[in-house]
Image 1 (cartoon, rainbow, N blue to C red):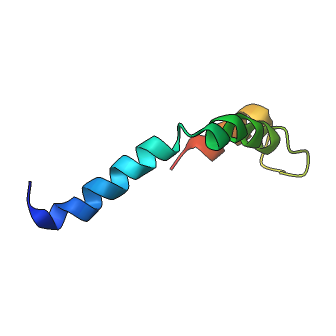
Image 2 (cartoon, one colour; image 1 turned 120 degrees about the vertical axis):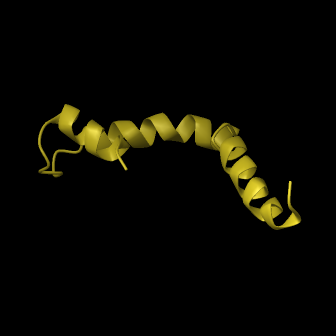
Length: 56
């Protein structure tokens, strides 16, 4: 591994680990539920909002 790639590897590793911290692990399902069941979204039904929020 080149030393120039070290910051990128560190950022990717930190991002993967951050998804499993106690706070993020508990809040992510709650946030996604709030996002999908939002009545004011106007972007279609819950399935359409779920697909739009999980897409790129």
